[in-house]
Length: 264
Image (cartoon, rainbow, N blue to C red):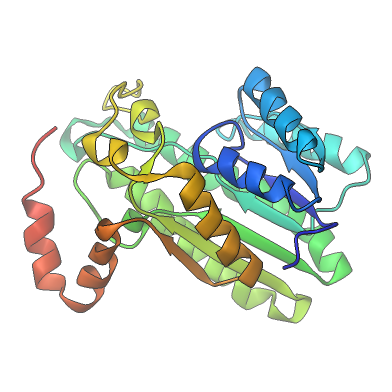
């Protein structure tokens, strides 16, 4: 997709990968709808994007609260904006053992990562179908390709996104709807700091792997290149992404390595 002149909705735009992708896209002189929970941070990112030459519409919502998503969509729709692309970057991670995590925490993770993401997709999709064109991208994770210790519901929610969006793609080929799955490894963001623990509270620590991960702006450049090409899967990270291939081609080795992850 040529981003210039397009209307693109980016969620999770207040920090991390979502923010860096929004900034990168804004240099393409497009119209950006930017979303996130933190209104002050959202206004700051919108200002930076406007400074890069793009038209911006910040509209906040909470992915874990469906009515706020519906309200945000109504505001966008009232402006007559029909997104050419919808790029999902909002979500939360997890740092907790299955045996110590109550069900309401698992539900919270799914509400944000899965239900919030597909809720906005279902609102935007009819407009794309009506005009016979649209590109949707959802951010998964390398653990969206395999299970991993301390990420049970996070991994499950990301794997659920693969199933949903692959189905959406299969259903809408005739409508010219394209889908990309973004699959990051360790990226240097605050995702581990904001991850939920077994009590549903913030983990509050920057993991060593996260701290040493690929810089978010470098990650965003790779992602934008993949989005421009509308790649079905955009795998981005450092040496850790080899685990995706180990799980696929050497499953016995994967199970051995996963069982050796040290307790947190």
